[in-house]
Amino acid sequence: MREKSIPISTLRRLPVYLHYLNSLKDKVTNISATAIAEEFGLNDVQVRKDLGAVSGSGRPKTGYSVTELIAQLEAALGYGIKTNTILVGAGNLGKALLTYGGFADYGIDIIAAFDTNPALWGTFVGGKPILPDCDIEAVCTDKKIELGIITVPVEVAQQTCDRLVACGVQAIWNFAPTILRVPDGVMVENENLASSLAILCKHLREASPQHSSECS
Amino acid sequence: MREKSIPISTLRRLPVYLHYLNSLKDKVTNISATAIAEEFGLNDVQVRKDLGAVSGSGRPKTGYSVTELIAQLEAALGYGIKTNTILVGAGNLGKALLTYGGFADYGIDIIAAFDTNPALWGTFVGGKPILPDCDIEAVCTDKKIELGIITVPVEVAQQTCDRLVACGVQAIWNFAPTILRVPDGVMVENENLASSLAILCKHLREASPQHSSECS
DNA sequence: TAGATTGTTAATCGATTAACAATC
DNA sequence: TAGATTGTTAATCGATTAACAATC
Figure 1 (tube, helix red, strand yellow):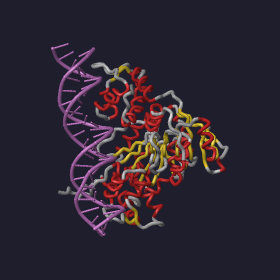
Figure 2 (tube, chains in turn red, brown, orange, cyan):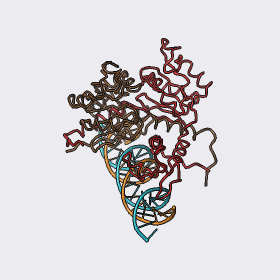
Figure 3 (cartoon, protein in one colour):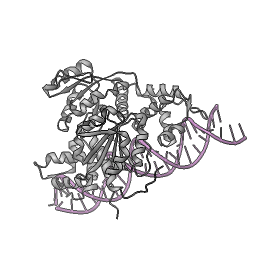
């Protein structure tokens, strides 16, 4: 039996629901999809479909058990499963991600970071060692790295990606502002800050005529 | 006489094309949509439509003039127009963005950062002053801030957003892992790292080597 | 003319939303 | 029974892809 596969758009919302449910769990025992939709300004059918993809245990009139739903969301998202990870490119952004640390909550275990700058070799950022980039292959193979975080300059992003993929890395989190080519079976998630800014600035330029200044 | 509005999915790719064209401009004078598509592993019709949304000056057999296309992309993306910006929440991620600095290229001028922590008040990160968060309203109004970057903890993200919107901020770049409610006319771009990780980890768990037999 | 390339119109696909039936 | 809520089926919408005509 194949599991029903969860649409990507749904998957993006699940961590948001999960966080909200955790904040509720000491206060209420049940919650409706309608109430969750209200909280985030979403369509209620959308929330119901999202929850239906992981739960199926909602009950008419009462809604979902908060604790049960939390357990189901955590299972669906694979929380508690450790993912061996490396980061390549210890510039400002790379160092920030190493320092940030919030990823541990999601099972991300950053084994090491890599950089071409010898001045960084052997130093630690956020408790993670920075190693020479020529060691990437050895570490990936040895530690069975599954996820690679790319924070190198855009010019070398594709070749960095190729190296990781060649070592068996199946998922790439790309912060370089480019589109990476990868073989089938490898997933790339882009965090393209330039693209995000382009959209926001465009919005400001074209939708910006004066507005009603209503405040509460 | 409204300008043809550019689809968001297209807008996300334009900065990628622009960067590529800039890397080419000293080497070639013309380029085809097909060649760009090849470079990034995209469908050629998609690239042609994307370029058509900003250019319309492609010519059969020759393609597009690189310099002309660069100028048209920069105009469409509003490069060179300064966008007054503030950042709220000078934790690790906020500080990283302040230090990163790459945004200046896109016209983003971060006037100041804000935090609730008095120990940070009056300090500078990446050349930007960190001010008490109670000054947000004064600065937004005074400096006509258009874009707000939210890097506060998720628990206070919505109220931070509300404050910025109340001061006339029309575009929000949200790094908190939640969905923000905003009035019509305000755009939110989410950089939800938790969601990105969820997708990547899910891929690793279900696309693993052995595939179960298909269901009926 | 032949071939490469553009741009447009139509088909497909996935995500969102609306309508509605089922259930407690 | 009445009302709230679930879950499903159908309609809509936007983005991608395919087919094709136009052009240099």
